[in-house]
Image 1 (tube, rainbow, N blue to C red):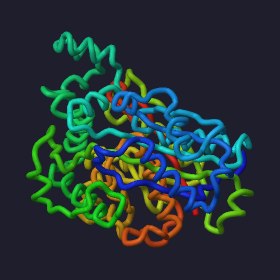
Image 2 (tube, one colour; image 1 turned 90 degrees about the horizontal axis):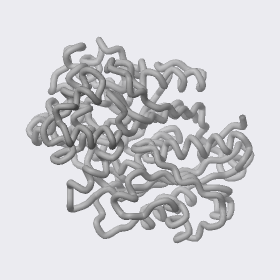
Image 3 (cartoon, one colour; image 1 turned 135 degrees about the vertical axis):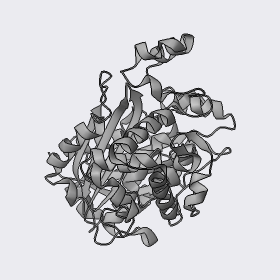
Length: 412
């Protein structure tokens, strides 16, 4: 395999844009990435475009890449439409870097986008709720008492009244995992609230974040109950946006930049329906593969962006990746280990909880952050001496776990 570099990244500000369409998100993100790379559109050999709920939200199915890219003057090249729930654009990135590494293409565009916000909140929740086994969901809705028959042991108690209507079904699953970690490692709701405070502090430094205002511990705890221990400010907001990256071979990179960011490893995995152990997660199973492929240990990561659809997920993901020991989790939170200037800077962008989570754009949004961190161009949220960075992006629900996972490790 050839060495693969990222030479350009771009993104929109994530947020709620009722008057903007998917073509606008793709155009802004892609044009920013192309400009950042210093290339022209004619240098792009192929495009990989990730989006998850666009069909359900807008009606645009099947040819999303062709529709959005042709509107900005990119046509005729091979285009690949990628859908893998919240891991759609990170999966698209995985495919693009594989193709470049294999010598199929020399330069590829990766874009992730989503139009998820609607004044009809139920429409958004239903779109998010489609990232499950819908046959199973229909059976449960027709007979709520059958939930235990369709889910692994222990899963049924995660889903409470109003799940999928008053809130995304994902929030109940995340809450269940959060309670498990509380019981096992002595964490409290206040610990999770402290993570949310950190996320919003980082988001206030990020011009692309949906939420750009610092909050207090009291504000997080009193922001409204979602599903214990989750409060509203611990949960990622519904929103829209786009993000993009340019990946290329070493030879192409040398023509355009002296500061490429290299793809050290790229791993995609899928969940298992039969798993009932809340610690036998897709993250725990795919993490070792990513570190082995990159030739490093977990403690060699300098900065990481994890899939914190809820604030507790941030510390849970770090535990599953073996970056933090579970018994040290409370100490890491209390002593600020995950702060930008801490021992293990996590989600300097603000993460999903503050930056936002337009699901198809999230993976590329994480890559945007890590690439800038490794270049030293992250501004006020810059992590000192960051040389190795990681992204962790999951999606969907299968049994007790995420259905899809994409992990990437980058080196400057």
